[in-house]
Image 1 (cartoon, helix red, strand yellow):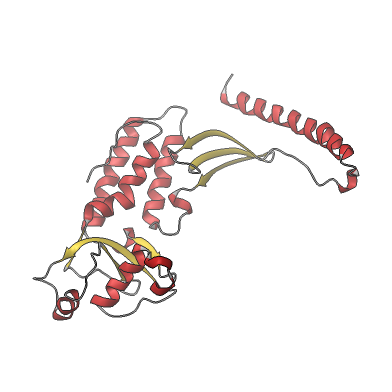
Image 2: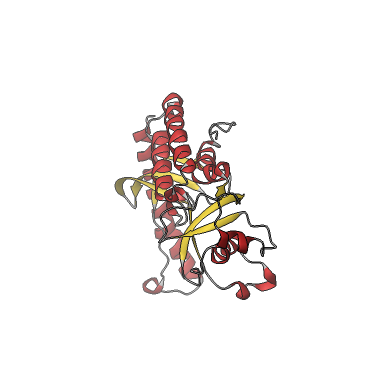
Length: 254
C-alpha cells in the first residue's frame, strides 16, 4: 500500500468512526441522560491527518506534516513547543531550523549526506555570527517585573542580567523593556572604561549573563562572551534536539 492509499484509508476509517460515534454512540448517550437531540452539543470529527511526524525526546514538542485538515487537502507543518513558536529565539535560528526540518521531511527516506552538509554549512555560519557577537542570534528577553516582586528572592537570571547592565553601564531596564541576552565569562579589565571598573568592584554576586538594550548596536568589546554557550543556544542544541530521534550522536561542534 503506497502513501496516498494509506492516507485515504486513514480518512476512510476516520469517517466510519465519526459516523458511529455521532450517529449511534452519542445519540444513545443523550438518551441515557435525557438530553434531547437538539440540545446535544457533542459532535466528534476528524481534525488532521499527517503523513510524517518528528517527536522530540521531551513531552509536548513535535512536528507534524499535515496533509489533510478536517477533510481539506493541505501541505503544512504543525510545530508544537518548537523554536518557531517561541518568541525568545532569534529569527535566524527559526529560519534555519525550519529549513532543517523541511529537509528531514522532504522525502520518504532521509538523505543524511545532504542533511549533514547543510548542518556543517550552518555550523560555520552560526559560529561566525557568534564570534562577531552579533545581536541577531542572541536570546530575546523581557524585564517582566521588579526584583522585589519575586518571592523568596528567586530572581530570574534574565532579570539579573538586565540589572547587571543597569549597574555597569547606565540604567535603562525597567518593567516592560526588552533586550538581547549574552552569556559572559567576565569583563576584560584591561579594556573596560573607568565607570565599569568602579561599578564592578561593588558587585558581590556572580553574574554569567548581561543584556544589551535594543537601542544599542553592539555589545562593548570588554565583555568576554561565552561563545560556546551562545552557539549551543542559537544553533547547536536546536539541531541536536531535532536529530535526537533519528541518530544517537551530537553532530554540531563549536
